[in-house]
Length: 198
Length: 234
Image (spheres, rainbow over the protein chains, first blue to last red):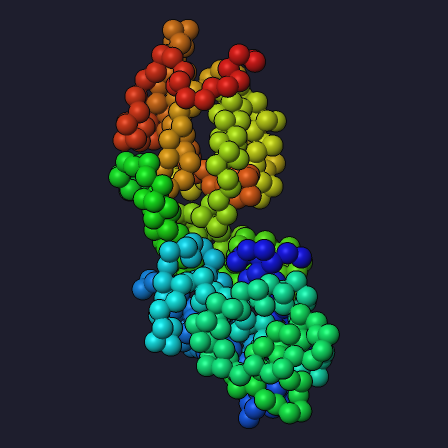
């Protein structure tokens, strides 16, 4: 696996998130997640909404609002199906258009489109880990993927997203794997303490 | 949709910045077209053609069968064909790759070398001939049709490279009935879509009047000068 460019990074992030979604059963919807006060159903909706927001930020006027999907007959009320559709829309907004030289407004800031793509990739990967946790599965983030995201995190930190869009950093454990480091950077702890914000 | 020369769509320019900008426009149209697909079709198209996943993995991730994935992909491509341009926007081969495929396509056509032509086609290639509602899907089927109807005799065709709807295209000239004079008459236009360095779709517009709209002559007595690298190897 290589995450040397935007597309392969997104491909691996998507693979990891889709993998976590395979774990989800309807009976898991009320399960607690690493995100405080959120059960799994709420978390799935959050990821869906969050990716829809990023999609809208990235997209041009031709692109419909992500919320249209909520009423699509083929998606219905299944939050997993809705999230899968949301992921696809985000990929469509991220991949066919070159991001070089594009700027987007997010959270009142003007950011390069590439940064927004990275934010989406991080959002996908962190919540994929959250979803797996809620399903009582230990799915560390693949090392290449985690390392690549650690590599692109400084611009996000510079943009003030850590602690704002994402939770405040925690101290990484000694001898941490890339997965541990990334989870700590974005305030993740395994279910129990439940410290992450979003 | 009728083919239009790129120069009309985009203005004649070789400015790389403008070209990139135009590519973005083509892609925007493509993204807009994708919105007409069902969620499953869109997911399969993106995961297969953009992210490059195998059909089996897509099926597993979406909780469906490989057959359903293949079927959805086929339907998605068919539906997109009505709102081209074009699948090639998903995966643009590098320019030398495109050039090589186009050169070999031209040579194979002119030599009626169906084997060489078949090597350039994806296994799921589609051949469409608007306005005739005729479609051929799959390399073997396309090959059989070309052998029987189009490429049965060597040296019957001359091709000239152009671009249409943002995609590579060829003006086709057929040897004139009194062909001993070396005269070839405009026959139509083939617009190609490439995915992964192979031809995914050929849209053959068999309308001679289109050739003039592309600024090309209606009759040629010499082969088009551009790119006939294998002409001496008959």
